[in-house]
Image 1 (cartoon, one colour):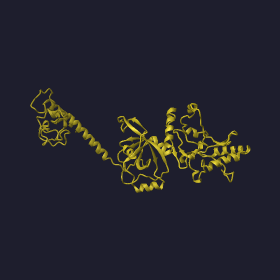
Image 2 (tube, helix red, strand yellow):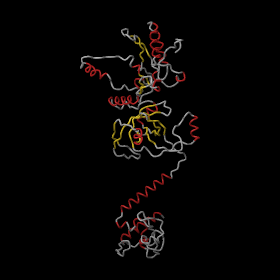
Image 3 (cartoon, helix red, strand yellow):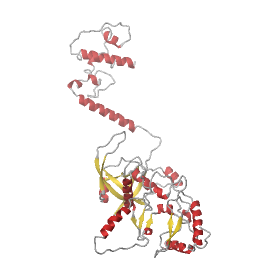
Image 4 (cartoon, one colour):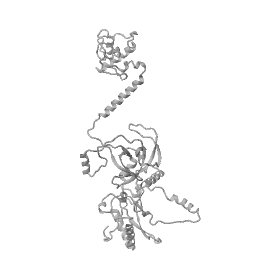
Length: 461
């Protein structure tokens, strides 16, 4: 029946075109008579004079071609998209007046409404929560806690412009880029300010500096978790969420894939195999400047520049213990064990090294083998420990392979010597144990462990 109705409508449209919508102009019928019993659409038109002249749209007794003028009389279920009367848009008198643009707008509006209704009525058995957290931003004397969305599908991290103004941030540079949108669309190219912002956890146990691009709006409103049963279940598994409650504050920070690796694992995400040396050195230097801190003990704290894409480091102690026993035999044989031990104890006294608490020994980490280097000509330290960061086991990476070396400083020696010769008097100085004056952030220190004997009982490590 649906096919037959479409055939009838098509033939009606053709007849209406030939008769100029019933304006009295008749055209010669060039069609051959069709047998009355043949069940085709043309039969309904050719034999319309022999049967009751009913409207094909509403089955009422009026000519179909007059349905547009009998809008009040026609009981068809259709409604015109142009004038909203009860007839097809093809028969609308406004269409003959050249209002095709109005039709396009009407159709677009109807499609938009249909899509909106479809999305609105889409129901889900469970409420879906995205990865949102509460973080603390700090700039000079100002601190503010904001909602952040963790989106590892975004290449870059962003900050709302209103938050930039609130914290009175100064840009470190600008970037011109376009954004790939859902569905394959691409936004117009625009300039974004780049800001380096210190980010802290609410308990202040973790802090880092991230590079963010300003954006007028991050995303639409996102719900918070407020299901007490779900929160209790997560808490029983040691998972404590910060972004909970019934209100829905706006998302003001987007943490993308460029910083999530550093925040979640403490490693900068540099795909070293795909980047040239110059770019790698540049990113390592940026990472150093963004993570360095000046601590209360008057030392600078740095973060290790971890590389992504390498196998993990070896986490067991067996090789380091075997190497230590061999080194100890050598120290005792050369009668320098006490000197070597005094150096390590002095480091511990100065806060350069520390004893690992028993409750942290089982934590993941890396143990470095070490050996003595003897330099009799040295006026300060004749024996000093040297750690082997190139040590690795099959299937694992060495610590050196997992870290970016950064730009070479040896290239700066020649310009330094030339500047030194430009004046009549040169002044030099030396920082005692300069390398050891740098401290490493706590989450990285577990990968700089080493073994040594107990002071009271040298048979114990």
